[in-house]
Image (tube, rainbow, N blue to C red; front, side, top):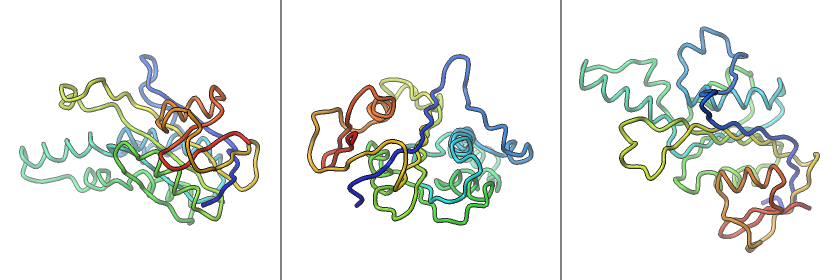
Length: 210
């Protein structure tokens, strides 16, 4: 695992009353029409931060993935006794990663990660183990209505994209142990990226401004 990295750039997008999805206008209209909401979020912010570059590997991560699309497919199966092939292709967990690779003609490797509450941590860990520049994309769509009674709070849509390089603007040390900061979550990562905190930690390693 790399013990020093550089955060070159990042984008944070969060759902609001005025903006339910980020800008994804760079995607051709014929493709946009077939995309799910989480694909629009993940690919939209990934395209904005990439700015046409293809010289990186990508790590896409989502705790729940295509749960909205999967629910639609299950309903369709029970109501119509068949599933839409296009809908099924959008329901797999690596749909956003594959689509982004095709749209940008990036032939480098990509990884899709789902690890429950540890999803963001595992995505960052995967990036730290890479030998080349990496773009990490962590995204989630607004929870489907049928799940609302089972959730303590609504899961609003969000997107986080970070480019991690061997040389760049902001040096980050990776060390063992706890820096007495909050455990790595979307909120603590946002605070760290925006400079509100000096470090962020997991159960076994810490990222700290160098």
